[in-house]
Length: 230
Ligand SMILES: C[S@@+](CC[C@H](N)C(=O)[O-])C[C@H]1O[C@@H](n2cnc3c(N)ncnc32)[C@H](O)[C@@H]1O
Image (cartoon, rainbow, N blue to C red; front, side):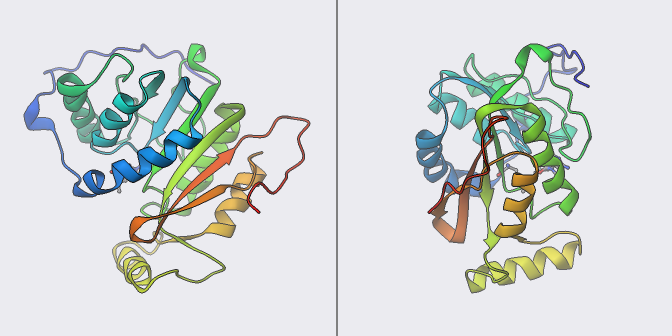
């Protein structure tokens, strides 16, 4: 079920510059990601970002794609304050107040008027969360995307059960050391989740630092699950 949630919420006290968090990787990856998004996102429409983190990506991408209504979200209240702080200082009219969304939750607090979504974006989440987050993310894409809409997923992945670089193997080991439920995911397992949710196998773009950009398109009710990536 989709609950009615006000688009604007009052923050008390109002988030200020001291609430801004900084994730250094966003400064490195935002330009390459924006370039790929530019080729895959619709020219306009409603987009939901999951696991927005600091909000640095949201404010940058919303400015880059002004015809898209950019809805950030994160389950961490301190990060939602950070998103709000960036939004107040640098956000344009198309950047919404962040929502509290845990992708693993069965229902997400989205306004009915905002559905269906034209696109979803999720950057650097599914390896830094239990597998249930990946399951919830793709289930949500199946529930909330319009047919023809797409889910963008970015991060490091294993392919064919193998790491694609020694640095990814080391990163995987360090993640599992922090939490055994975390770790790099197999692209094939993620693709299987997507297909179970009614999304086609992804377009794939190799990115700097051994990351991948993936674009999963939600299929219509009468579409066969076809391979889009030759
Ligand atoms: C590594 S950070 C990535 C943040 C941002 N996307 C970026 O690339 O800078 C992971 C983010 O996932 C969020 N997160 C963790 N578990 C989540 C869940 N179950 N649902 C949604 N977001 C989650 C965290 O709060 C955090 O903001």
